[in-house]
Length: 232
Image (tube, rainbow, N blue to C red; front, side, top):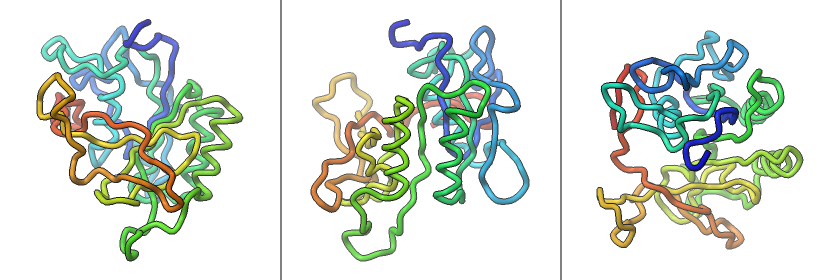
């Protein structure tokens, strides 16, 4: 269905959780993206709470698939007519093994069963001396590579917010994953004045591989808010 997303397509969002509301564009008929109870699960320590206490996961969900609202129809995501946003809460403190379990759950065990995965939670010790990460293809990245190759499910990972060469966070180092950096589009339509945002992680990785794979606008993006409405 063009750029709006087919009505059967389901996306796994592995992040800080998602707050689905009618006034933030994520629970608006006929394209409510709220799935069943089994499409929401947490791997974060503490009470089994799937709500978004941070706001990042809801914002990412809105960028992907907000329908906008009657009052604010302009704040649509890139694919507002997809089916379900599968809510896997892995931030702020899920372990790498739990992130792997969350990926498997979203694709094979949730009711909707994701056709693609978006992960914003990255791992890696940013306190190490330059270069900060002593890996070129981490265990978590190898799991992503295997999953994409075996199940044919696209996997998208934020590059990270470290802002220096070699700072791409795991599993952004996956060969088969799509690592995405952040550009400041300066509020214009043309791309000629776009610049990489200062905090956006960038490659090359140790060994010289080029990451991220692509960049997209990421500064001052107005999107779905966990408190309702839209904010940046």
